[in-house]
Image (cartoon, rainbow, N blue to C red; front, side, top):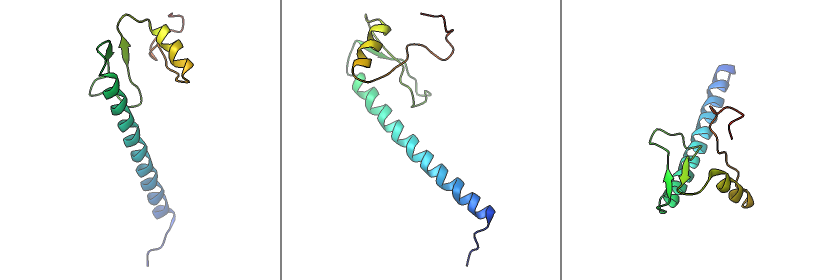
Length: 93
């Protein structure tokens, strides 16, 4: 019979946390791939992600359309996006 001590308990918790994190990551990756596949059907949309991009963001542009216009339209659909990177100064339009 295995005794569950603090060390074993900690290992079990880490294992389940890792497993849950992995499941969530895989789910987000699947959604990311679906969205990119859908957006790629349109010639006017350019996907700026690379194979090394994290799946939690999708960087895209629409030819001939200002990012602010895209942001405002998506907000009407309760989709909230950013038009800046985290490295962008606050005062940048």
